[in-house]
Amino acid sequence: MIVSYQIFLFIGAACTLIYFLRQISRRHLNIESAVFWSIFSGVFVVLSIFPQIMIRGAQLLEIESPANLLFLIVLCLLIFYQFFATVKLSKLEQQITALTQYIALQELGKQEQAEETVKNNEK
Amino acid sequence: MKTLVIIPAYNEAENIVRVVDQLIAQYPQYDYIIVNDGSRDETPAICREKGYRLLDLPINLGLAGAFQAGMRYARRNEYDAAIQFDADGQHRAEYIAPLIDKLSEGYHIAVGSRFVTVPKPISLRMLGSFLISFAIRLTTGKKLTDPTSGMRVYNKAMIHQYARHVNRAPEPDTLSYLIKQGAKVAEVQVEMDERIAGESYLDFTRSIAYMLRMGVSIILVQPFRGKINISTKENKGGEVLA
Image (cartoon, rainbow over all chains, first blue to last red; front, side):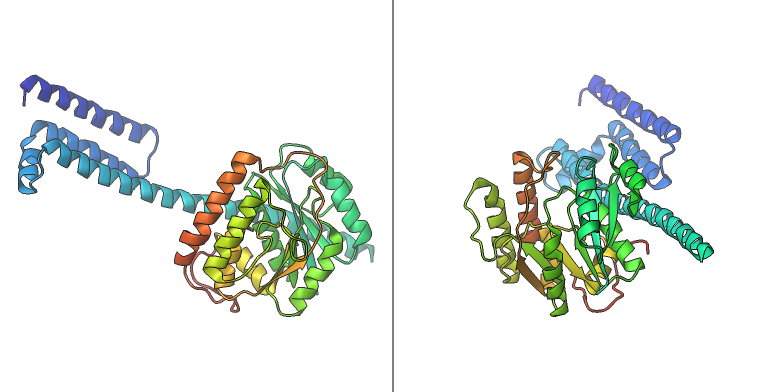
């Protein structure tokens, strides 16, 4: 690999890592999400310093190009992450729905109770 | 039978008074509840002013969430039957009684169908209805002539189902799932009116999207959902806040 290209990749990976870490602290990300993205971007920094890891891995798995192996890993990882994100989103939607219904039911319950009291007092 | 008419309303200021006043005047024997689904218009204000019984959702949840809120109200107040009744005036209250009668015969759900005795017109609009009917027949063996009809009456076990579980939208796919789980569904011939004011939610593109979503859900998704016992009260999984 051309050295200047490797430097370019390193800078890119490092910037991504720094950007993620800053965003994580600024946006108060959950620890579990923060850990995932820190490792995810950290691995790229390591790979930009030691591209031999990918080259060796591709040789072992008999994948023609190290880039293909990288794409494969990243794609699988992101697809799974995206899937579990939608699982989480579904759950959040259900929780918001339940809470919204709960609020409305409580409000109406209070109102009905008040009406009942008025009725009883009239008697 | 203690019956609750659930009227989900989203931006129905133009229709709500006519529909509800007519229901109260002609059918005082039924209790009703309007579920305001976070309307942005005057719907909740009108309901309060008129003194209607109103379940006021602070945000918009969509029909499924609004209807479920009504079902949870029905469950809390121990109703024996609950009916979904449109706020736009499409449903006629005179058909509530024959639908309730079906529950007395032992059915879990009674659907107000436009096409039991009247043949379904062959039109582009009915294409979706044909395909959803076909999908339900394919997966459950049950012939439903008007699966997209929103006028459905539910018995106590079904109130429990809808009130306590997630993924119970008042849609044909839920119907197919419940049929598979042993729910008995009857159809009663009804007439429906065209909506008088406001705009229908389903335009052409949305109709197609709806049809595809229902088709995929009925054929591919519903068969993989867990088995439930519809007669017992407590089921594991998918529980929502009581």
